[in-house]
Length: 432
Image 1: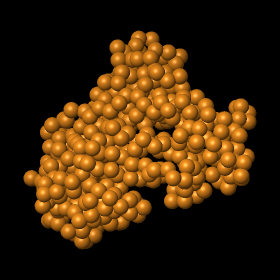
Image 2: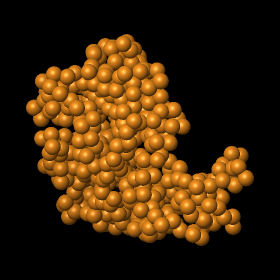
Image 3: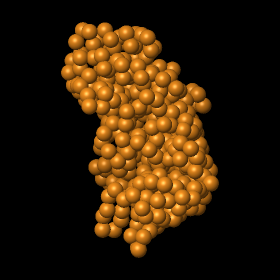
Image 4: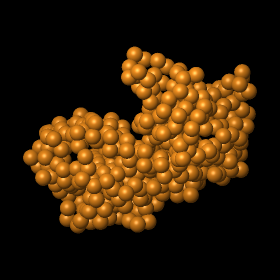
């Protein structure tokens, strides 16, 4: 079995070593460790491998808390100390700026830490009925596979959700449509827990009775989703309260549906909003654009600070949710929200939105390249960029710095997804 000394971690949390000039990515290995490994995929320029034995362990190695770690693809870094995980993510961000963007932040912000465990309030659990494996399987996908890592518990889910996983197995196994139910989506907010059952066939009367009983016994909302996310409807209880995120610092209650895209970690999201507002410093009378605005997560705190906000989002349902949240929080006169595809932004479409003092950008993994390339003479003096992908942030930073005359004042990571390699970050750009 080959051995290697691990040099560093890649952006997916895999150890990196080299053999005769060929790069090898070793799953389960940490920097400074000597490990034995087995190659499972070989390419001309690199190999992918898995650790079979740790010969000399890093001082930062810890015993994974979850018994499913290694098989389940939900987490990739439980074997690394929680503080070291954040430091590794900071290095991923800085490396992306240097190697992709050719830029460097003037200041590296202190990391924003979230909880290490029990933080994930949104999750999509895959469901499969596989008789050869004992029946119903429920869990995240296996690492490096589309198969299901069958879970009995999950330490990144809130305790009450983790504890009900065995009961979910029993529930689905008792349904006549067990083989026509591919997913259960978990969504938590405002003290309520919703389970959205994706159903490819209408449940019969007996199935509906079981689902209603589960909702009552477990004190959860049960939703059924027969088609696209917009088709989801509440089954039980019929008078269930809406889900919401509370942002006490800004006196806000933001409501959402269980199939809406919202942050998975409400507590860390509040810290992210605080950091974003500190960097953006919205003031009364300022005109601020909130691009990829979602359901108002950043735009409404800006408005609460007195700014006039224009939010733009590609998902029309989220735009409507943002409008409703503005009205319910008494901010309807300070904000306006529009549905538009920002990936198709042009100089003309950007100019049509108006002139702004500042921007906040919070794009998906694809980044905001069309938006930053469209910046013209009426450029905002300050941009706060919230990112879930260091590579696209660095690419967009290169345009802002090298073409649009901005300075990268600072950047840092926000640990929204502990135990995973996911890097959330925030950066501040100011016009020269």
